[in-house]
Image 1 (spheres, helix red, strand yellow):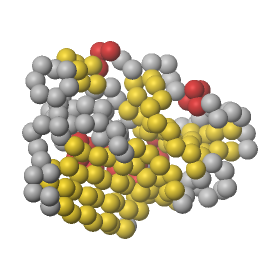
Image 2 (image 1 turned 90 degrees about the horizontal axis):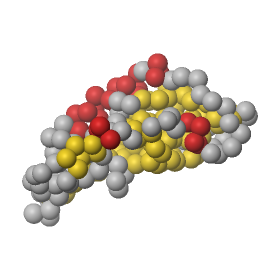
Image 3 (image 1 turned 60 degrees about the vertical axis):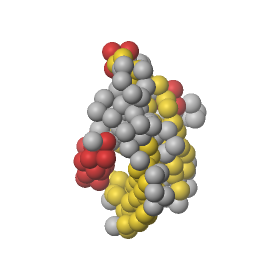
Length: 187
């Protein structure tokens, strides 16, 4: 389910700059102003995304709502964190940072009710910025109920006023047989 969720959301990043909204200007690198009340900052990456020589920022935020935590008595975690996550991209301007993308529909939550043994997909992955591209990596590993581990990295470039998917790297490994596969696609 999480893999299909990520695939559907890719279209959102590639074709929907409507998620962009005006951000708050700030002269400091304290990103607390971009974290809404009731949310926490999980990850951040800094680097130049729009080739202007300034370090931009990508933030991963998570809602901190106790109502989105579920007790679980089966295999896997005793409590499932189903709080939504937000991807926020900030471009650095001479006056501070400006929000150019904000979406709650791309990053999966820490846990999944349908796969309670699934480890946090962002736990070993996450967001990075390299060579003017945004890379978002998801790792899929089940502590019970499956032998396969896999990972996907999606690479986006900011061009024509939107983030376009320019590459996908996939890897898979069967823990019981030792077989593995990898492929990379450039768009």
